[in-house]
Figure 1 (cartoon, rainbow over the protein chains, first blue to last red):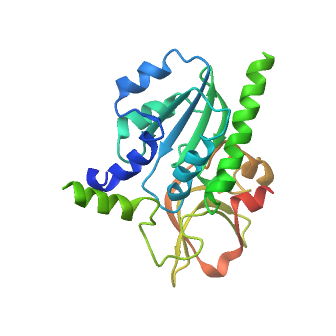
Figure 2 (cartoon, one colour):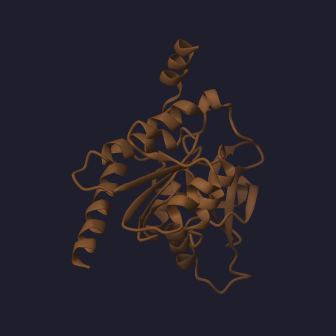
Length: 144
Length: 105
């Protein structure tokens, strides 16, 4: 059951103020995912402070990196149920978890950070893994 | 209203919704048992009945040919397949509890 909007709004805004495009409907998800191009990051947001409390600051740190995906999206698990389900359908080989962070290249999963890879880690450690993935993705794109 | 939102925002960002929890609360763990069955799921809490796991996958060597190591690697790479929403693993059956990250090295 979704939490009251007043409680989760700060968690949404923690991402949207970074320039992450929040997708709250199936149509919004399909509009950006149906014909993907280039590198994109999808952050599956969560109210769980155990993990999401570290993941959101980690993303903020990672996005300061000189290399980053051009497209940044988020859906909110447990809150925007249909949009989240639709987004997950685009990487359905992977089990749902939240929070999670997915890097896509031309719509294909290039890097997947599951919840269990976030739990118990500092934002700095999570961000370091993300920026390494950003660099790898950019290097592969340049080599292609 | 704006002031209230500000206070809530300051209070909620990054907070843990469930204070006073066990140190493994919310962590994805691998629970090995005496009968050879291994569970991978989110640690919720211990109580007198055992360890409560949520959204867990089960590796039962009696019903699968997949090696435990492959099962764990797959869970790490593609995520934990939540075959069961909740399970209590009795304390006396538990051999070892590790995080999934520890288990896959």
